[in-house]
Image (cartoon, rainbow, N blue to C red; front, side, top):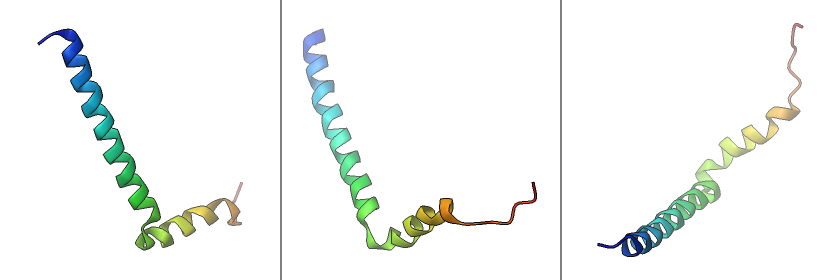
Length: 53
């Protein structure tokens, strides 16, 4: 196997891997079951906790 052929195979499989990873992350982010976690995380900076500084 030449270096060029290995480079092409790795490039194709790497692209497929990252495409599948992107689809999985997109599915997780848009899943309605995850909505509560994301809403809670979105409001963390707006909470006014009593800090004893």
